[in-house]
Length: 221
Image 1 (cartoon, rainbow, N blue to C red):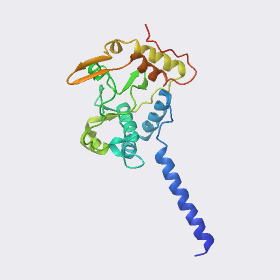
Image 2: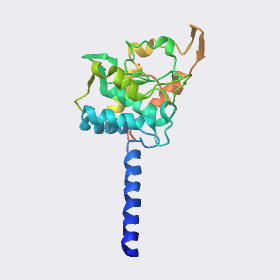
Image 3: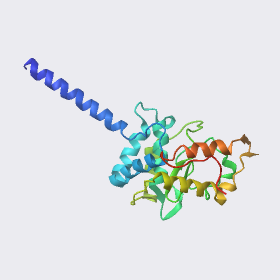
Image 4: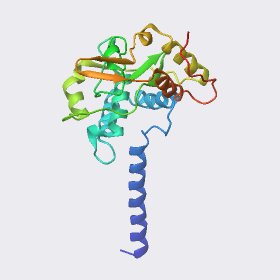
């Protein structure tokens, strides 16, 4: 085979590999992601339909290096699952697969926070915490889908992609809500004891508002 042909084939092979890597990385959120970035990404999965979305989420959960249950890719897949899947028609029973988070969980009941560790307000989703506290063995996301798949319903409607003003108003309503006021930021019980900063948490949430809105760090009245 002529050398030029071999060179051309080698170049095509490299390009195909590069495209495959780029495709596998295209589901990552940008650094300092906003609630609008999360909505745009979730809508891409809505457009895929249930079967392809499940396949892509399983691949995403494995991570680029196969880190599986302990990597950032798995955490993102878990959050997307909470947004995209519910049990039957019960919107308060989400398909949740995550572990424990650095949050005041003793006063954050699942009925109050169905998307935990995400929060939804006026159709806008915010990440309450970044990272998980994991212990022991964790099953792969494929196991969760295989064991629970017949019970869950896939989201068909797009998420609202919030403007800065939409996101700011949604967050003001969240931190002025009754469920927010129930949180005890210093608490103990069931063998746990913690102390968290409400102002620090609000700052994390404000950081997810798309740039352009007026941002404060105080709870809404």
